[in-house]
Length: 287
Image 1 (tube, one colour):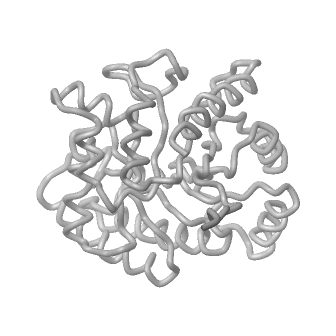
Image 2 (tube, rainbow, N blue to C red):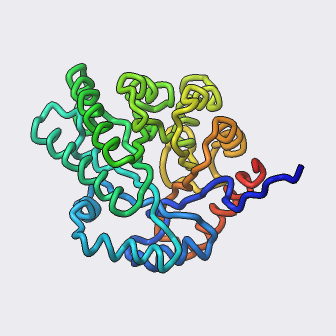
């Protein structure tokens, strides 16, 4: 019997938008990503007004961006939605919660218009406020509403595992996934962050990933060192990417994003190239 040959790649590897200089146009970002070998770009909707304004793009602007993706053959397929740091959906302030839910609705609509499949949610009930029973209650209530919004558009939401105690492990994220109990709310872990948590708690990264079995939508590949969660060059930290990817692959994860930041290095394109080849080689070894 002949073996069936499929033309589809076994995985997709994306690049976080902030790995490239912010003053680059979308066209330039897409060309860098494509030339390097990436499959897609992850757009950032952070707490800055500049990024939040993207949620108010006109229909014409959205259509032009979609056309550009087709022209450059480089889609935007995931969204890192960290704007809720400033406007958390668990805030005790009604106006803040209201704005947070507006951002959620706008982000889901933007994802639908651009063809984005997964929105990564920051795993915070609140960030600049103090967490308490009330903020956790508001957070859970609004998550249920968000999951229904996402369900109406067929967009997956996934919690990022963060650097704070509230949701710094897959296990903690899964508590809310189970409470909400929707196909559209899952986990989108950060391998670097859960590595730091494993060191802190004396646990294993692979065991924590196992807690998300069947509910991990994608995986952020990020380098960290104990106590530091950002801007660590790949290969200069303590994250065991080989083991992390092996476990994620076993769990059926097939969408990955290299998360790192442009920090002014004039040789930033070399950083982009290095990150791609390091992770693509590890992923190819699983195929």
